[in-house]
Image 1 (cartoon, helix red, strand yellow):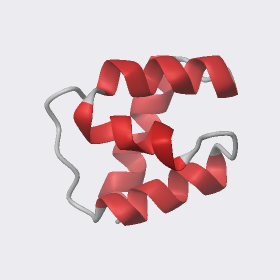
Image 2 (cartoon, rainbow, N blue to C red):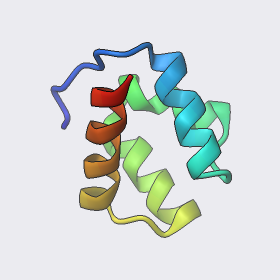
Image 3 (cartoon, helix red, strand yellow):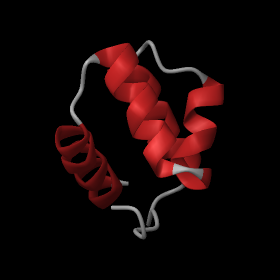
Length: 65
C-alpha cells in the first residue's frame, strides 16, 4: 500500500478513518500521505490494529469512495 494513491478524496478517507478509528487525530492522518510507515505505527499503537488489517480496510474504503 505504500505506493498506492487514493481514488477518493483524502478527506473522505480521513473522515472514515476518524469514524472507525476514533483515537486517530488530524496530526496522525497527516502521515497517511506523507509517511505511511509512521501512520501505520501510530494506528497500531493507538488502536491496536495490525498493519495488514489496516491496509485491507483502507483499500476497501478507497474502492467505495
